[in-house]
Amino acid sequence: MQLSKTENCFVCGDDNRHGLQARFQSNGELMCSFGSVLIGKTFQGWGMIVHGGILAALLDEACIYAAMPLGQQAVTAELQVRYRKPVPCGQVVTLFGEVLTHRRQVVTARSRLVLTGEVYAEAEARLFLTKPPD
Image 1: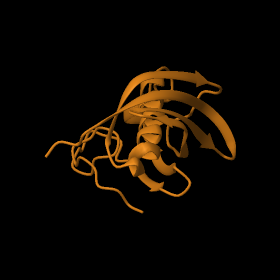
Image 2: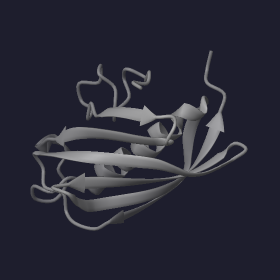
Image 3: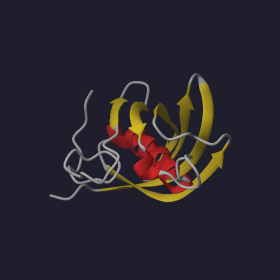
């Protein structure tokens, strides 16, 4: 299912010309998300390697999209990222997110960033569910 989003979001917004414009989808039955994005040199850090903050933002978004089928707005309270390999600029990466636990208004989710079949970065997030704005 394709989810609605804020059109100016830095990670997934279509109207943010300076953003990543990543595409995510969610599966409510499996409580997971998946997406992909071409990360251009605009988002490089040292050399031709993607900046770690950009990777963290993508991993965070995969966790958020995994929690969206719960029907409330999810906001990140904590994000722990593990960088396994440097991600070169100019590559299409795939992202996967999954809900691990959901108790009351707190969700624990995990995400992975994959390139050429290998995990390059992963994260675990604790999310709070809040009522969506009217």
